[in-house]
Image (cartoon, rainbow, N blue to C red; front, side):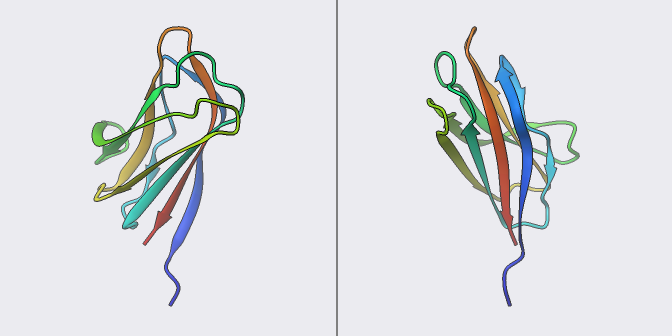
Length: 111
């Protein structure tokens, strides 16, 4: 039997600055999740720190503990792998003043 898996686009062609986050995704059925964040344009300023957040209801969020740096160049890709995450997932980023990045964020889930 093949494992069940899905790829979801949770952010497409959005320019992130300040504090930004992907759309939340309900993923309680999955055992593992991988976020890919691709820079669609050359980022401005220092690359942002990004965090995986989890939620019991898709409204109230807490940091899951995974941190990573967003891409520093156009077409660069950053990745975050998580497990034991409950039901809802998202990526949140914190940019320095004047920094920004246009992103494509995909979430890959496997049962």
